[in-house]
Length: 259
Image (cartoon, rainbow, N blue to C red):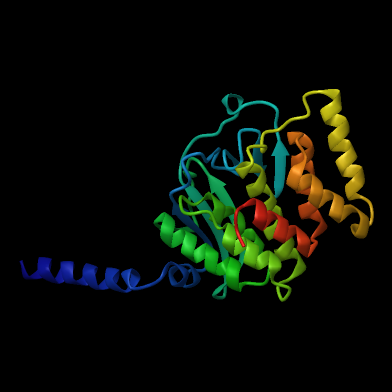
C-alpha cells in the first residue's frame, strides 16, 4: 500500500506542473513539431492532410497556402468533420511556423508532441500570436484561429489591418480574411459566374482592380458596398482586400458591423 501511495503521489507531482502551465508555455517548452488539437466549428471539415472546407461556404476550400474555388459540392470531396489541428514548429523556444489542418488525426505521430486543448484556450493562444507576433507566424495563426469553435476574431483582425506599425504582410493577411468574412456574412461566398453576363462583370472588376489605386480603390469600395450582382460584389471585395489600402479595413469593418 505504501508503494501505491508513493506511486500515485509521484504521478500527481508530474501532472501538477503541466496543469499550471498555459497552452503557450506548454508549446514553447517543447521542441520540434508540436500539434495542438482542439474542437473546430461544426461546419468545418477536412481530410486531415491539408484540405480544409466548410469555413466560408460550400465552394471554397483551403489546401496548404492555396485557396481553391470549386463548383462542385463536398459530397465529391473527402471532407470529414473532426478536430482542428495547429501544427507548430518550435526551435529554441520560438515558433517558426504554423500549419492548419482539420478532419481525421494522422495515425503516425512519431516525433510529434501532441497537446489536446479546449477551443477557448486554443483561440486565446492563437489570438495572442496574431496580436503580438509581427513575423509570418502571425499570419500563419489566422486560419487555425478561424477554425476554432469560438467567437469570430474579426475585431482582432480589424485592429491588425488598421495598425500601421504591423508589417505589410500581416496586415494584408488580416484584410484578406476580413474580406472572406464579409462575403460569408453577406451570403455571397458561394456566388458563381453562372451566366456570360456574370463572367463579364467579374472580369470587369478584375480589370478595374489593375488600375492605379487612386482610381480603382474608390470604385472597388462602391462596388463592395452596393452592387446588386453577387459574383461582382464578391470579386470587388476580394480585389479591394488585395490592394492593401487602409480604406479597405474601414469598409470591411462597416460591412461586418464593426467599428
